[in-house]
Image (cartoon, rainbow, N blue to C red; front, side):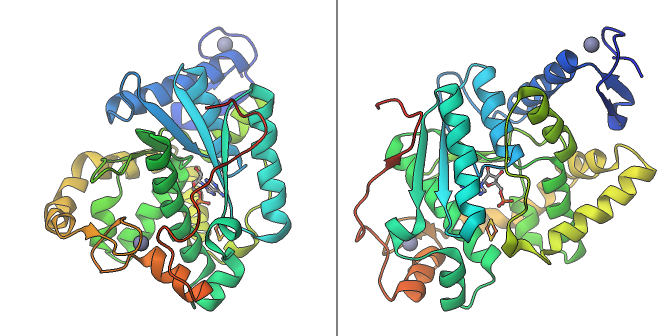
Length: 320
Ligand code: AMP
Ligand code: FES
Ligand code: ZN
Ligand code: ZN
């Protein structure tokens, strides 16, 4: 197979585009897809400061690399979840990447800052680990973005992730989630915008991107995600994609173009009902937000501002 652009031997076949690409033109394709997503959904404005949430996995490290190569001012944020060796190794990958490119990585360890880790916290709060983990990460992303004056938080969610989540939400007609499943969540009440610049790229493409760019990432999946429904949805969608390349893209982008608006109408009323959490100030519909309730159950203490606000800046950091 030859590169669609230059006719040199291809290193990757992208069936969705019905074309092969050499290394140079594949990397260019990835950058173009990110640029297109950023423009199409108004993700990042000129001069805005971006905080990239990096897990040490391929997607978020690729997202950080892509955003910096496109000229965005983007620092990284790694959250230490305390999931044994998995967290140790993933943190090492994030630090190593930051150091190799002289980028600033902010580190927040859940145990140090809030007094719990995901395995023990989830058990104490009787929550599924992935749900306690998602809740904690979202809270930390918002908090650090506000403290650091970032305009935008970017995550490494790719097309496979978004299509799998959409599939799950449609299977159960979770209309509230469908209303919020967007590549951009606007800023509100002092909270940053959330963006997913990799929505036009797949998991396989991100793995290839990392290999070609020499990015060393953690390959293992989180040990607590075993049996996670989304992994099953991804497999189902991969089987469909195999039969009919482009299905994942059409499913997700068709939803955004033709269906998403219908779910949002009812959701605006819910947004209006948001008020600041009595403990930490994050927007919530209850008096105390779900994260603060999790901290309270996991540690027996209230979160809020009780714990000193301090950033651990990892290796590769530039003084701020
Ligand atoms: P996940 O929730 O594991 O599917 O990850 C989704 C996105 O959240 C990743 O692409 C990252 O951008 C971000 N993320 C996941 N884990 C971490 C972490 N430990 N620290 C910072 N960001 C993370
Ligand atoms: Fe959050 Fe596994 S990364 S539970
Ligand atoms: Zn080429
Ligand atoms: Zn709170």
